[in-house]
Length: 62
Image 1 (cartoon, rainbow, N blue to C red):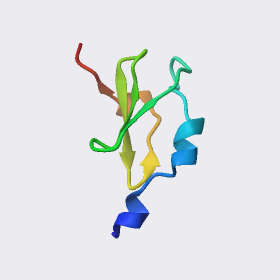
Image 2: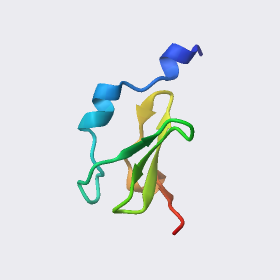
Image 3: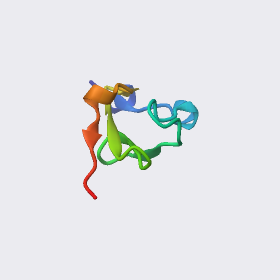
Image 4: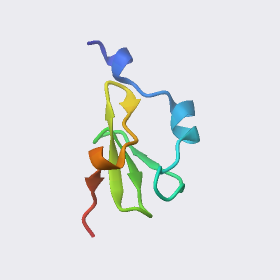
């Protein structure tokens, strides 16, 4: 897979919100995650596609 196919569209990221709280998400490019600070969850981005399923999210530590 080349680097271009693994990138996430920045315009898409602006449109996405947390599926639980409907709050804005913070993009963590290094970890390839979308962070919901209000829900304390990190949603993974796999092969450039955000996985916005609560059961797939990682709980954030305080």
